[in-house]
Image (cartoon, rainbow, N blue to C red; front, side, top):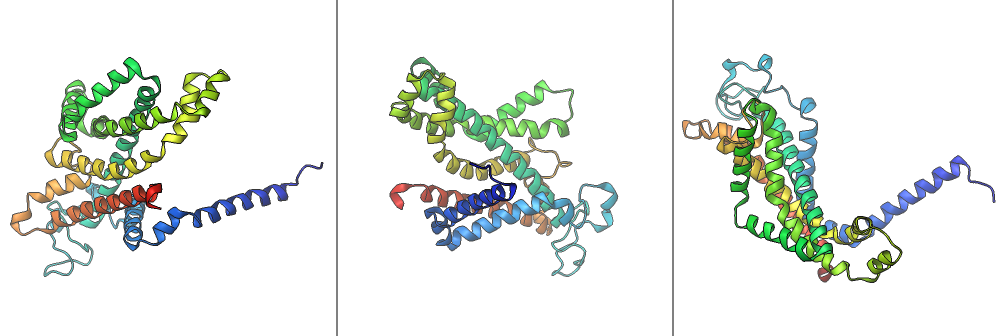
Length: 320
């Protein structure tokens, strides 16, 4: 039988890709997405936020944290539609003359990066420990679950504050600008792993008693291979929902820590630091310094939570 030509290989690949797209467009999940205008609006908002954050250096009119482009003479200019507004600054400037629109775009970059990395770290820890607890059982399961039970008694903010304090004590010789983002990511990751571990553990305890796992054991596959190649793909579904919902919680946690002064410093903008700065001028009449970053944070978290709720319902076979 002659081997296929390069053109035929490309045709097969393109056909496979188009077939995948066709199956996706014909799936129940896509139909559920198209039937909910609220979900589509939420997805559009989240997509715009990610695009704005990713292309902030090209979209933002100025770099608000570059001293060469910031002038104190432009401080506290109101939005363009108010008396005294300047067309250069659509939604005004802060007390240091930084363009609020540019500052929000740069703040979105940091908030989404910290929240996303924190959630990925939490998922990695939780999935690993959940697989071990559910598959191994016995003493391993008992130890991991007791640690999880203890952590559930403490609020996530308190755990993050504790980790932040310990990290700052350990790295006294390093500046806060250097350690702020890694400390926040670790704090969020160690605060949210329990949900993933408990979910994966329950699903793993069901899956490990099925025939395909017994067959894998009979052929002599090592335990780590069975857990990663066979069990994990069958228990990962609920994690996608938790990831989506926890992204909003992680962004709020970062904003809360930055607002309290133990997160990112003012030299590294995030939505939390912008709200913290603007809160000082709320009652002086400069309402826009805190209103627009606060509204951006609220809209982003609401959109992410709406997507998480839709994904939870779309992946639930009982609701199809």
